[in-house]
Image 1 (tube, rainbow, N blue to C red):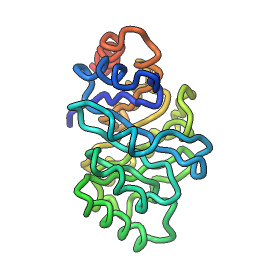
Image 2 (cartoon, rainbow, N blue to C red):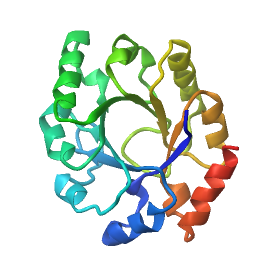
Image 3 (cartoon, rainbow, N blue to C red):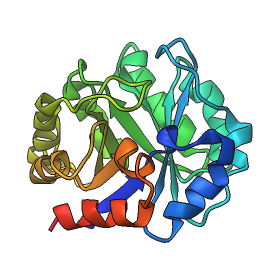
Image 4 (tube, helix red, strand yellow):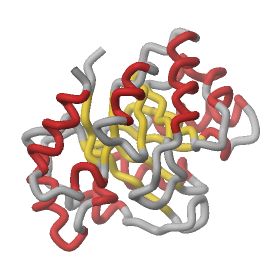
Amino acid sequence: MKLKISPSILSADFGKLNQEIQDVGGYADSLHIDVMDGHFVGNISYGSVVVKGIKTKLPMDCHLMIEEPVRYAKDFSKYVDRIFFHAELFRNKGELLKAIKKIRAMKVKVGLAVNPDKPVSLVLPVMKEIDAVLIMSVYAGFGGQKFIPEVLKKARLLREKGFAGDILIDGGINETTIKAAKKSGVNVFVAGSSIFGKKDRKKAIHELREALK
């Protein structure tokens, strides 16, 4: 399974967003977009108008950290390749499956996200119906937090249960934590501060790739 680096634009300078994206465009494998409503998580980010304006040839993942993901997914599905939302928002497997089918009908791939304090058992009953799982290794909503290593057991369990799709990890990814994540079965590494926090973005991505060897 290919190992991929996905810069998180939550850590980019919004004042020159497209320039920031161009700086990583030739070196990254995809872009990661966090959408926050100020309710499901405490922060607020950007809406579909900003996402529409992103100029890139890279595939885009959209993580909906919002209370009504199905309602708003359509606004983003026009511009992104894959949409992630949180399983704990739904009362049972039936409701979750309905949400997955509705978002898939928008002609995007579908993934589920798991916060640090939530069990991966939320995902296991529907893992054959989704394309990817996003494991949060910090608490969603704010960049620059410290990596929570305990979440790696979720990736190991998913692989043990036979999940063959992409497993992403987001939060505190650097040259050290990326190695531990890889060993646990993660293959897509979402990095924000460790890329956009450095002047030379090409070098920053190269260093992360070197750490994966």
